[in-house]
Length: 65
Image 1: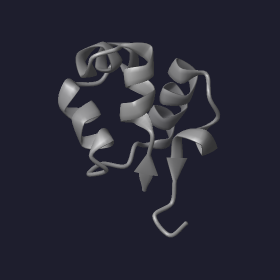
Image 2: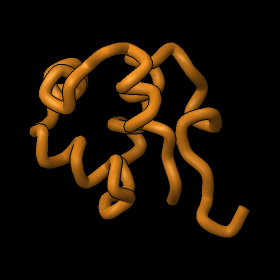
Image 3: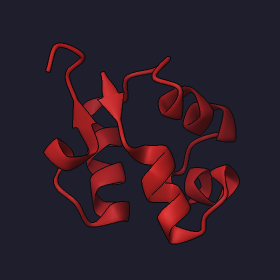
Image 4: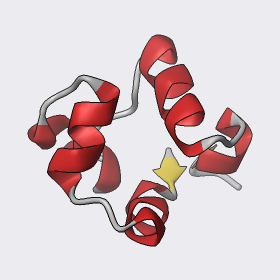
């Protein structure tokens, strides 16, 4: 699954640690998410959506699109 977390995080001026704190996850989790090595659970996807104020569909895309 592809995501736009790195660019969205950059637009906010947040470090990976800042985003991790807002999401209540480790910085390593944010790194894995940004690199596409980890797909978030549904509860985490909803937290990410709330943090950025965007629907999940604007944050994540299936690889086959």
